[in-house]
Image (cartoon, rainbow, N blue to C red):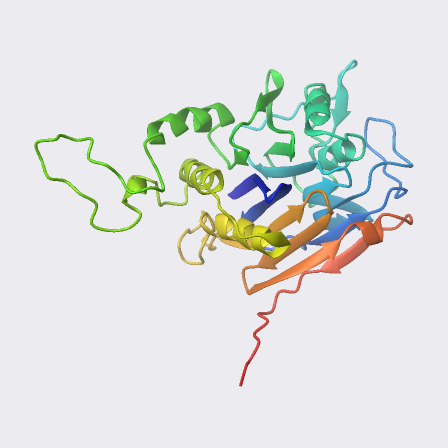
Length: 325
């Protein structure tokens, strides 16, 4: 269960997500320089590529990115898509054959725009090849976005389906087309005070703030989070400056976060928002906070773009409280 958002704020594009999970996967911020060697299971490796930064679990010196943004401002996030994601048993000639865990670095390493990434994704055939024993494949779909556009890629039995995403939002099941269709049910929502459209025969009036959004779903199901994220992102009004934009982005993510105790996973553990992240795509600054530490931490990509080794930053996961007396 996750939510991904892309937003233009104060003239800049921000990309980020909530990672909702009932356990930690060893995640840390991983900055990949341009000359970090990348090898792939079925495609030619890359000795040089675009630099990128994101949250990853690192195994055998390979970053298994949950999401990342490259130095050209293109971001990709993988979100859980159980029961729908289809991976093929073998590669096929004429396709771009990738294991699912290779998709983010492969695409971000070579694509300078989201539109370019969407063209590449249409040729991708995802092969059911685990990274190694003990690391099962996650069933995923992906959102890719930059300041010019946003797309969703869903691996289906017919192949990779790529959709333009005018909402610049993605959650989980059902497939993307359902979420966009359901938004039509909420076109009357407004941040403004409502007016009486029921009947002029009744003296109806608003008796409190926020009544224009009555009907906005409040549960944390994927479909409801999609609607709620689209509403808040679409009506966002942030304060000036970088600080205002970053703060506003995290408030939008906060409107769809998982609170411990609110969702019980089938295995008996609580589903929580383990971390939230926001990337200034133009400046390459990766901001994040965790469930247990609401202080915003930041890592800059530009300082890590040279060299040939990953730069890793473990999460600051203990609550940082500033005592004032």
